[in-house]
Image (cartoon, rainbow, N blue to C red):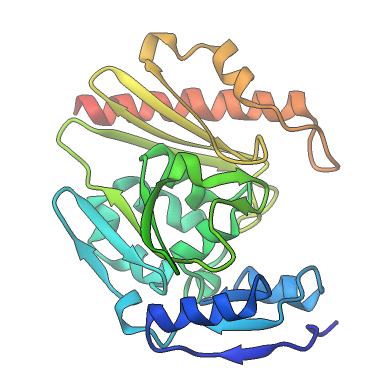
Length: 270
């Protein structure tokens, strides 16, 4: 199939992009890497009236360091982040990115694009929630920051307004004594996960975020001794589907989470 007809705009500033979206009155869609959006357009699951291409906005191509955080712009490719020192400064990003699709897809796909797409089985939304990242949104009323844990409203649903652009995401830099773990199970490498987990351990407490187990990333923070099998099972609330039952996903997630919590605890101790 081919995409339904649409108009095309390529603004050179964020303000121009916001103006294009406002003019479209809910009928606009932002495109950057296009690795998620283009297949959706081709299958006509989405029929935007206007595609707003933000690749011409120079300010969105940067990785910037601030006081305790790294900020990744909306058009920065996943492969760039994978090769940048930021993948060591934010170790959970470095652990997760090799699991995102294939190298060729990461060469075009963007970190922010994956967050905006909000697939419940995607790796980067889970990383953002586990690290309590902040997403920067810009619209007609100005800019606002939204915590990743508040951003995802459901499968392919976010707090991003129809006239807003996700301009960047801020990840906290790792501190001494932090430990991280990441793992997933998929039928083939590059497929979306049947179940996956991101873990951050600090000071005897663990933050565990599951993906592929609900309609959005699911996060729990507790003392290490309180991360019990019952708590992990409770995090999995997706119904069974043709790929796996709920009980099978619970077992996958429990095994993954226990393994990666132990790995993160070892790293934190080291």
